[in-house]
Length: 131
Length: 352
Ligand SMILES: [Zn+2]
Image (cartoon, rainbow over all chains, first blue to last red; front, side, top):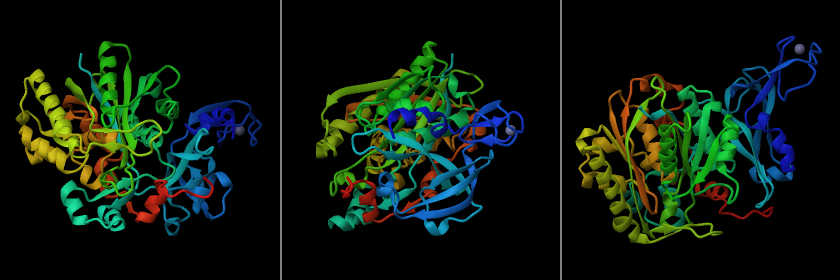
């Protein structure tokens, strides 16, 4: 991904900024211009709390080349406490520990880098809440 | 005007490797390393963790405790000897991730293991001068020791963050005195483009760590008009378990004063994060009125020392973010040398 493209998504990838429709209250991540629910065009932007619940999960063993060094790794759909569902890598976890319904928190992590000399892309991954 | 810490936090990777596991690979005698270094294990960062990611997580915990709008942070300083980029500041990514941009001064600091305390000193100074409202200082590292070298047993990863401010109602610990002590001492270095550092072996001890820390502690005690018995806690730089105990004893501190902030036996040496993480472990359990002395050490070589006094608000913020002892004792998973070698990129992959 060219640096300019990842740079434009920093509000979402770095700060988890979502948009809540002023018409019907539904939250979208990434933000949208028109609400698919009520066709509203006014949104309030806000930062999601970095917490949610695992809705479903799988293990990736043969990923695309930029993630090959990480394989095998777990990926899950996480329903955020603020509403939106995100597809996220599940980090620092044994695959047998992952279960639907478990609470997670999002941590800032390295996503991938363009080789040894390119830009490093950062974002969020989910880790199990272990309190 | 009182200036002090209004929020603090630490972050440590979850993985650990035991000293025995490293010693086994190199045919070294584990009991003698454990005795000699007073080290049981060290933290190991995952492939997706680096100084920037650890700094962001530590900063978020500090923000949770400070309870401020990140837009009011006027300076972000990350001190490290393992910045992910040679050119491109770690602090810019951290500031962007926590929402402190664009109205913000930012710089990365380097001075071996004291880069974190440098940021603390500078942000404290800027708040005191009235140039910024709040300053965020972070010390963090994902340090590497060459395979088989003595440093491999201790080089670990972690970060601690502190937000300095002057809001009377937000201060959890005032900074009462500061003092820095520094000379050119070639005890440890890494040249440009070198993957692993070099060190002066035994020269890192007496003429370096012990002489510099002694100078810094003597200097700040004199400046503050205090003696070792005035403190409930003292935190020294901790490259291994033995050095902070030995310097503490020599300077007249008791084991009780040293123990709470001596996190290295379970963590390893987190370089720029070492004494700062020790300070977070102390603040997690400190009581109002406690006096704390912190003294960092960075090879090359110098120390920054701080006298702090804990305020009532500490009791309100201790539970607002993960405590350092929980990160050390509970949130851990042990790895074997093979996984460690992969995570620390000691194995070259075909795709690289
Ligand atoms: Zn709507």
